[in-house]
Amino acid sequence: MRTNPTRRRALALAGVAGAAGLAGAALAAPALAQSPWPAKPVRFIVPFPPGQAADIFARLMAEKLTDMWKQQVVVENKGGGSGIPATEAGKAAAPDGYTLMVVSSGTFGVNPSLYPDLPYKPLVDFLPISNIFLVPLVIVGHPTLPVNTLGELIELAKKEPGKLSYASAGPGTSQHLSMELFKLKAGVDIVHIPYKGSGPAMSDLLGGHVKLMMDSTASALNAIRDGRIKALAVTTARTAPAPLDNIPPIAKTLPGFDAAGWSGLAAPARTPLEIVARVNRDVTTLLNDDAVIRQIEQRAAIPAPGTPIQFAGFIKKEIDTWGEVVKATGTKPGT
Image (tube, rainbow, N blue to C red; front, side):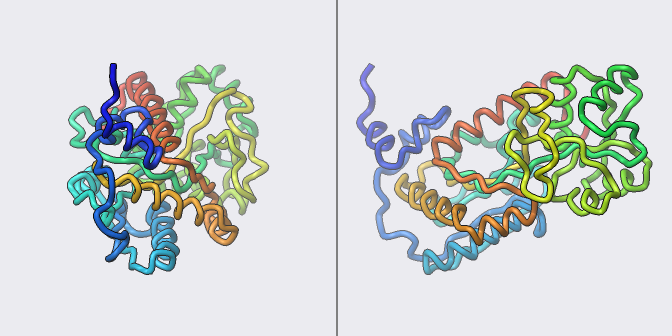
């Protein structure tokens, strides 16, 4: 079977289109940008309200890229609806490099399985550019929880199946599904108590109304540091940033376990591939800068730059992983 010349050229231009699921987008992508880029302000669509990790780091990237590109990079927040309306807006934007989408574990990793009629396909309607950061999640317990290690938690849960419960930020969130993945891998029965957000769940954990929770390290950091809750394990195979670098990974007890919240950049399909490559190069430069790394790690996150192909492969793996968890648990939006 002969390869279409346009597709061969697109693959060679930026090394972005060969990843799983991107063949159609690559085939349709314009071969060359029509004018020097950027020649006007660039917009980042963020599918969350201001103040969340994805928004904070998007603004950090926007500030640094404004200096690099000599053009204003504007962050536009479109929160609500599990990120679906914002992602639809990104899909519909002109593919000229002047609108880029901030994508996340929720919008690109979980939503494809959670919403059967999702109005976008991450690896068809978008060209992945680069991941920006990973946020490890952490299993934390109230001081009265009679375990101090993950192994002890598993032992207790197997001894008393269905008697333990855990809080999460809500159904379908990374906190919920990561804990469900842990339950599947460990073979334990721990009851899920969903809350409307991480804040209310943490409040009940601190008050002792629930004894166990999966949360982001960024959200749980202060309470762990103050000793108000105890950390049992982090979800990433990579070591969490200090001061959480002494918390063992789940993978130490359950080999191969690796999960995190994350956020990165993508462009509408048909965006010129050399623009995708340019943005990737500049974002990678920033994420290897010591000052930027410190700013990210101060919030208990891990810089995670990579090539567009690596990011596309990562997204494909996330879709597959969370698809299995959603199917195994019967998770539906709001349940």
